[in-house]
Image (cartoon, rainbow, N blue to C red; front, side, top):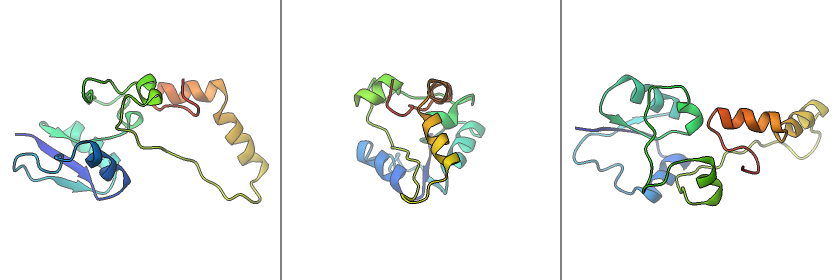
Length: 130
């Protein structure tokens, strides 16, 4: 028996259901609802026969298997090309007015090769892709 874990309704849950509409109907197994993806990762890592969804960066270094979707590995190239569909955009946001100089330097740093490499090591697709 498989025990599905899902986040409370929201953008990630909705995006998953767009591609896997039966995720919430796994043959009678009660679905466990949690509030955060971190909880999903902890539960999948802790209990056998559980399945859930997470960002690659949150499972980096965990004892969790990442499953290909329709034969496509969730690699940076597959995400950037659009071949891997289970993607949730992540955005840094700020007010348009009065962004402090330190914050502007940080945003510029995020586009640097060093920061881009760090994002890749953690399993995230950096700004602008490969």
